[in-house]
View 1 (cartoon, rainbow, N blue to C red):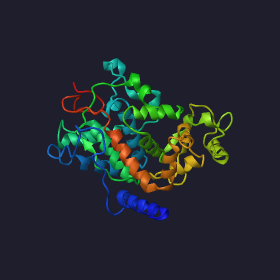
View 2: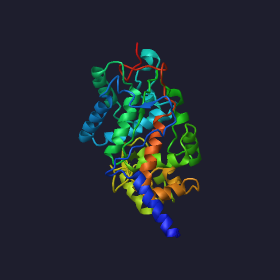
View 3: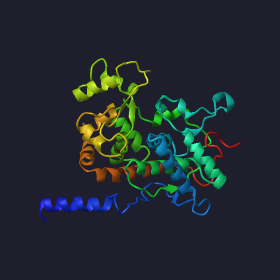
View 4: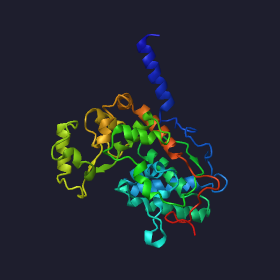
Length: 334
């Protein structure tokens, strides 16, 4: 076959396989865990996934930014040892010895955790002591992704909740925005997420905003030379004060700030990515090919993002007799 014909056939196949339009493509059985299963609550709490979806959709209508929070919260929970809702534990140190992971500097800007417990209470009314907080977080993120333009996914469930917080080791698992790309790739590789999936997960930066505290090092005293000069001046207007404690922010994507799409990768190639780790994707021989492919093909990006989210959501889950099913997502059971 002629090279051009071969290329066209490949692209056509990609569209047919990964389109999220009329055919409603589902991604299933991609993750690492063999202990989790699809439709885990079918018999014990048949409406569990519907209740979660209804609440995520309802909240989105009132607070659009909540959809972004669900994705970030899943990332912060699953990256630190396990997808086990340890992030949600709030017991004060003086009350019982558990220190919240929210005390870590890596948790700066995390929002809307209270809504997990709101959904949990509805599920407790429907089927007590059955649905874990960890599964609520995972399924809510899945549903939020669809609201922002991502693909629908079949997500396995059956996670149980941790009885402990990992506050003391959060920084060993969650990369910093100023870390080298090699370290970031290594952190993801440690939990079984390859370079391609890591690049696609960072595509979550196509939505939401970045607090200026994470940008000032690229803007002051002089603008980072790897940043587009005009965009750098725009960011300085958004973040006029180099004070790292100033509560200001800039949107990740000025064109489609609430749509999960491949504009993020176009910004990386155009030197308009906000965080240093984002910009490094465009200069590494390991990640650049993926960035280029995702920038040119939104369908490919969305497919890879779905695959990566499923991998993340199945990181070392607690199952069977491990952990517990919390009654209150903020506290371990008594």
